[in-house]
Amino acid sequence: MKEKTDFKHKPIITGERMILRPFKEDDFDEMIVILNEPDVRM
Image 1 (cartoon, helix red, strand yellow):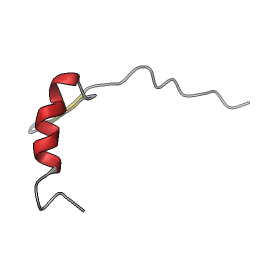
Image 2: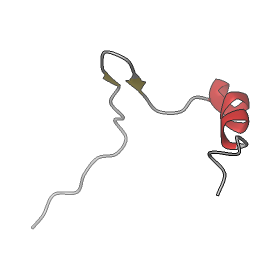
Image 3: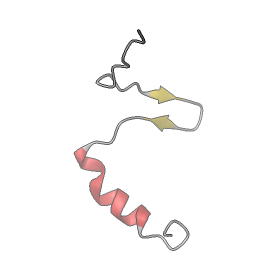
């Protein structure tokens, strides 16, 4: 039987020029700005 993946743990991945992390409530306002950019919108 295959084990289920536990998605409760969300890692933070860092690189030379970026950090990938789960979203936080404080990210909301900036994400609205980013998602409304003409080059980002679909």
